[in-house]
Length: 182
Length: 192
Image 1 (tube, rainbow over the protein chains, first blue to last red):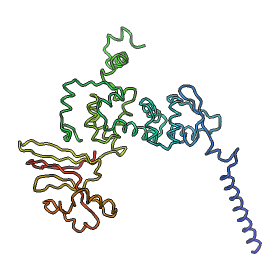
Image 2 (image 1 turned 180 degrees about the vertical axis):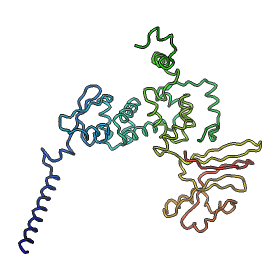
Image 3 (image 1 turned 90 degrees about the vertical axis):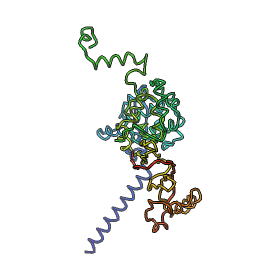
């Protein structure tokens, strides 16, 4: 009885020590092997302009299109993913936005073309948070602006005749008459 | 490849339209079926428009024919539902002295959820909102910035028994519009 008790206690001790060791390893991080799965790992992405960029896994994780590939294949350092619709310039902007935790102030520095290209890239890479962030940023730019500003901003040609536009402008702002609510 | 002389004799509407469009792209972008936003797929442009407060639609429908059609399309409202940007709009149907029926719409953006519509003896129509009193700062500012709501409620025909709630809730008037002699026919809150 006593022997058994001792041995099981010893096993327990051994187990907790092992656990401690493992935990210690995980926290401290064995530079070569531990943390291989998470931090520090980079994925090589080849942009539309042929630039190979090493992007942190934390950022790549937001790109659902790549995640599905990473999940399907056994990845190692030689893993290279081509993103033929995204230029290196736009990918750099995306990385900055993700690292900046989607600060609307950062979006204000982007040009109209950059905003549009990031939206297309976010859609292509299936980055849901980025997509919502950029779509909202663009909406914020045109919100409460004049019709002329919206046309200029996007480069849209006004295809109303003068009479049609005058007629539309006459409508009472309070009444959405003629709008089908269904 | 398919665009040979012999092929053209046979009317192929779709492919012809496609090539015409492509050829004309650079010359006249505003011709048949231009995109909402140049160089951006329409499904992405709709995602932008759906994130605008609905009050902006009145203005931006003037951008182009395509924008106007989109703003009046059910597709846009489907997207708004999907991404949760619908707003509660209050619509009032009023009959004026010339027997003309008119819809009036109230933008709820700054008001949040609407709770109550009241019509007083002066035929002013007011929209009220219940504000919980637990937040002292809010109730204090509400009572100073707007006339105390109980006063408003006193001469109100539509008054609903809320006396028991006065400890916890303050009715704040969030909008008021005089319709003169016009008669209120109907009012509806539409989540759109």
